[in-house]
Length: 321
Image (cartoon, rainbow, N blue to C red; front, side, top):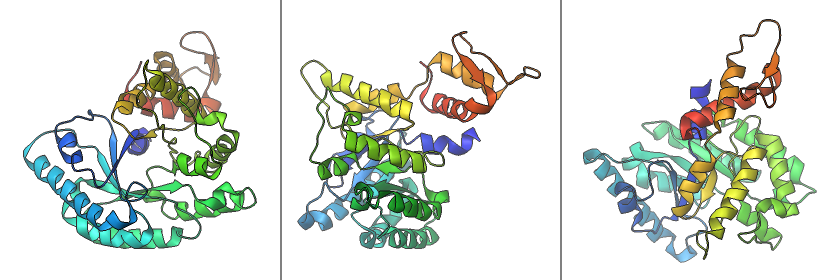
C-alpha cells in the first residue's frame, strides 16, 4: 500500500516558473534547484495574454533542452508538469510537447470547476490515448463557486465527482491560495500564516474535509523568499507546521530557496517513525492499544493506522529527523 501512494506524496515542493523562463532548462540540468523537487512550467497567470504563443514555443524548447541533455548526461530529473491556461489549450500544447513526453509527468489544471471539469477530463483522456506513457493531472481548486458560501458545498461535492472519475490519473488536489486571497482582498506578511485569514482557512478546511480522506491535498503557495534576518524562512516553517498538522502534503513554491525548507519540514520525527512502525506491525496479543516508543502517548492500532501509513510514506520519501 505504501508504494502505491509514494508517487503522490513525492510531488513535495512544486516549483512554479513561467514557461517563458529561458534559464530553467540549464538550472535543471546543472541541478541548481537540488535533487528533491517537482517542476511546473506555467502558461497561465504568469504569462500575459499577448505572450501565450511565445510561451508555448519556449516551453517546447525548454523540454527539448532537458530531454536532449537527459539522454547524454546523468542529473536529477524532477517530475515535470505543464500548467495550461484552460482546457481549450490542452490538446494544442500536448501536440507541441509530445516529442518530449518521456520527461513530462502530466498537467496542472487551473481553476478546475463544475463548469470546465468535463472538458478538462475529456480532452485529457484523449491525450492519454495518444501518449506513449501514462500522464497524470493535478487539478487546482480556486474557482468562485467554491468561494461563495451559498454554492460552496454543492460545488465541492460536484467537483469531487468529476475528480473521482479521473482518480487513477490524479496525483494531487491543489489549492489556489492566492486566488482565494484575491477574492477577499487579503495578503499575509511573513510573520503571519494563511491560517490567520479566517475566510481562507475555513475554505481550506472545507476542501480538506471533502478530499483529504481519498486524495493527497497540497498546501497553498508561500510568497516570501527573502528578508533581512531570515524572517521569510521562519514564517514559511511556521506555516508548514500548520500545513502538516492539518493534513496537507507538499506545497507550491515560487523560489528555489523555498525548496529545502519544504523538504526539511516534510521529514518525520524519529519518535513518529518508530510509533508508525509499531502500529503497522502490531504483535501484542489481545490488546490493540499500548504505550508509544518514547513512553509519552498512546498508540492504538485501529485509530492510528492511516496516520502510520502516511508517516512511513513520508519517511521513505523525505527521510527522518
